[in-house]
Image (cartoon, rainbow, N blue to C red):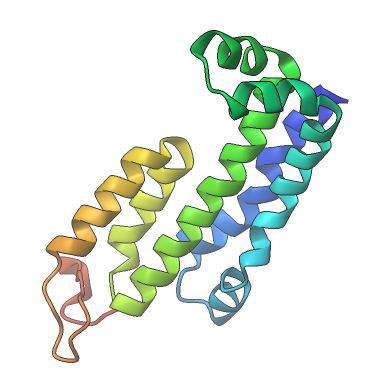
Length: 156
């Protein structure tokens, strides 16, 4: 059961990542990704893994100790629960980055690769997005925009 849930976790998030990266301007992408409920599937997997192992999980997180954390998260159930947790929260961060970049007029040619990096290395992708967000020039309406050279002044 643990192996099945582990293998199921990432495919539950892939459609949302694909929409944000490959169809950022599609009307339905914004509608779908605007709902925070897109993170529910991986979090339900987390619950399915965490509830039967709650005693070990609680011991690991209530009084963090490196050895206790290592023991729990080094087990198949702990690693699978951690994976589901990461997938759900990475998707939440990616969702924020996508919505924020669309609101600020950041080119999908800039945001897409950052989102792809965020899937794999969320802290690094998030830091890069925050840097891009901070360093982008302000538009006339006060919002920031990052315009790729190929757009010739048009915001995607």
